[in-house]
Image (cartoon, rainbow, N blue to C red; front, top):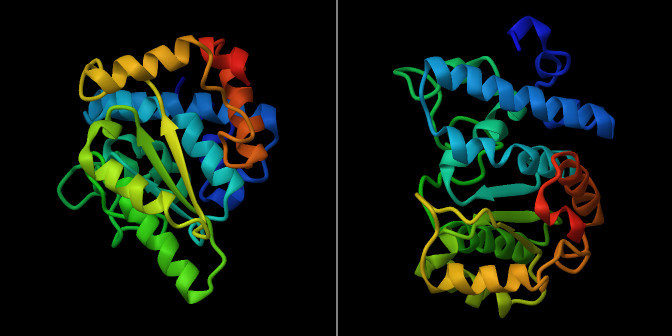
Length: 236
């Protein structure tokens, strides 16, 4: 798909533009967004796979929540290419990781949509909990979301964050587990084995409870999943 053939990509410069699209248009936008990332990374290499795996998730989050007032903390900065393109950096993405260009990771000085400057794994829950707790203490009404992968969940800091957040019942924090069975390579270890056992038993589903009551995310993301006929679509 050449740049001139995009129907929606060139029209979306912010999450506000994204919210104007219908469900079917969102699916096409995701396809265009993924293709654009591939095109750009084919001439200017970057962290391709992790960002391709988070396209629908980034679209769903920016569609449902009121960013940048609501905060999204991405656990691994490698997966934020779609997030950057959605939030007004489509053309700047051509300069990704180049001298004088945009960063390959979230950078708070680069955009108000980059809530936390995280590069590598396991930091998102603790960072997001700190933001959510601060908002609670200040009486601010905002949603804070931590996006963490199953690979990052093996880090000790992730468990520290869960321990603190779980003890603070009034703090408005949503943790999304991007369970893709991958870390820097194929996931290994006891956590991966136990998580796979739960998954295969059908103990984990994308239910209202699992989404923290955020039904719009459930409906939107499950629509994306069904379109691509992924195995977990039966749980939606």
